[in-house]
Length: 330
Ligand code: B12
Image (cartoon, rainbow, N blue to C red; front, side, top):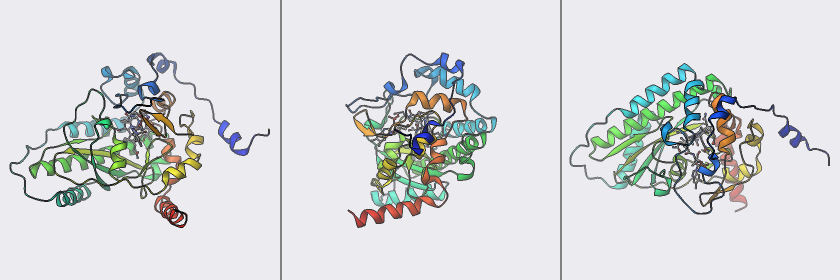
């Protein structure tokens, strides 16, 4: 059978040979097994990366990235973000004011947006989002999102891209810290997380529940305004709040028929079909393939840069189109 144009395109990738130093640091266990690929029972995720190096199987590989994988400007941003997130927050003020959960939710979102967040949403924390070995005693997560610039992202993988990623990590962390400080001044407990460290919880299921959008084939989320170009941070709190609902505008169906990210990925790490992972059928990225290229190529980001939803001005128009189509053919 003659090769279709698309197959020819898909196979025309230059081969990536990982640095032997990296290969020598790989643990015996596959990252996909750690992530629960093929597991049908729901379970909490196992910490895999952006954790304390001595607590994860891929700790030596992570240390290799810290030593070789980051440009000094990105390291500077990262250190600033980590310092900010570790600074002590003000004590919780006594006697909270009496407001309804609706009023607190509106006020908290306003504070997040007035600091540096581009978007904020609320999710009730599901214990299955919390990493094994971590403990979370807060009922709510306020997820904040910050958009990333298309210009530097479109150059992925590059040091310019990596610096933009770390600039936005810093902005997300500042928004989360400002919000956590405000919540504590209102008389409720709050803790900010974000930046390049994973924290105690998986962010994407929380962001989906908080109305940020849908999981894309490339393993990142797609938002109807910012497409694939946004980063996330969050505040955990006991402030009485109201949860948002998921925003399903058709990105999942779009991904089913789109192959842009799978073709763009230099190491074919993005699965074309959804996979069973810890009891959920979802889009899945092969950790073992992704991480080696990521480590040697400035944190990669090719998949989100290539995503059709990322081009300037595309996401809102595409979301509108999909919604209109769905209304015509419910
Ligand atoms: C570790 C990590 C990585 C690792 C490993 C990722 C992996 N797939 O195993 C590496 C270094 C390779 C990586 C790469 C990237 N990452 Co990353 N990563 C994380 C981090 C810190 C933890 C995620 C994790 O533990 N994954 C391991 C397991 C559990 O993965 P999994 O089962 O395959 O689940 C993934 C998704 O399916 C989803 N998910 C998990 N459970 C469930 C359940 C349901 C029901 C659904 C629908 C989805 C879902 O979340 C996981 C994200 O990796 C998160 C922040 C956080 N706290 O969540 C950022 C995060 C997911 N990464 C992010 C990004 C953008 C990237 C990159 C594009 C890099 C870049 N330069 O920007 C690439 C893309 C590669 C990819 N999609 O996997 C963003 C995504 C933002 C968005 N718009 O969605 C996050 C949220 C960071 C942030 N603060 O903004 N990442």
